[in-house]
Length: 337
Ligand code: XIL
Image (cartoon, rainbow, N blue to C red; front, side, top):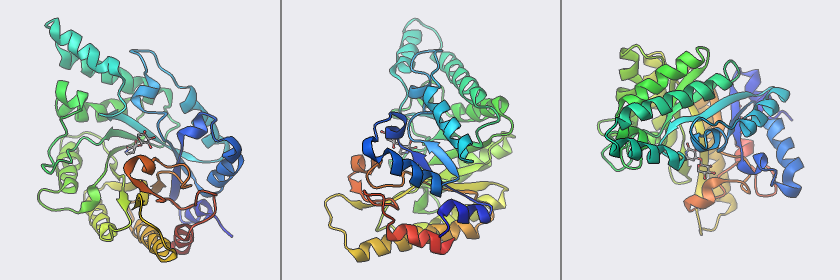
């Protein structure tokens, strides 16, 4: 039987997964062999779960750590996989030295904005520069839009927005493009699957990031939709279809970057529920294959044993079970491909 990546490659597409932190930390124990062979067989694009984020790559100012990222690059090269870099400018997983520095500069009467612009530029130059020519696409800015119902810019908890302002986004794209002109550059966010329309997050991303940057002459390839959803979100595929076609109308692409379809923790899951989960997975693959401006379909993990969902009050959202056996979701993806 053909695997996901064989089927995807035959159609000129990428199907991917993260490598979980346990893989980087050599803490998979007796799962190590099956974990790697399952991953290698099924994916032709790969993402680091945490290891290319700011805190992992620049734990202290100007001191960069690429060992884990390089491990991923070597694995990808050895197995003919492309790489999505994740993520350059995000409010989360930023080391505490960044905000400490901003506060120090501010209390000394200096410009925290200028300092953080310089910090972010150095970070992007160094990280994108280190992987120049080897990373197919970067999530340049991650989750810059609020999810408190106002769908404006995320301010709370964002050191970049608070000290720099909205233009940290513009600058991040400009610097990333300069550091690797061949890399594709994405804005990535969650809850874009609620649909387009006045006041929605997807509309704001489209108008205030995609269209605005394009009009400003700043290079951006498209939008990544994380798509961390629950098994009850059945309108999601059609909402994403709308976003993909809107992006196509302005010459941009859309990637599915972090898909998982979890069940609420504590609920019992029947065979019929797993079949329905598979059906939902299939609808995403159908829309992905139908859209001419989508290249990568990436799942945030593959085995239910290794998934961030347990921290999200959800579980069993992936396509292999905890013993690495294929779930109905896997078969559904194969059937669509
Ligand atoms: C998650 C990782 O899976 C966890 O291990 C970590 O503790 C927190 O981050 N959106 C993103 C990803 O863009 O980087 C997040 O990954 C999941 C939500």
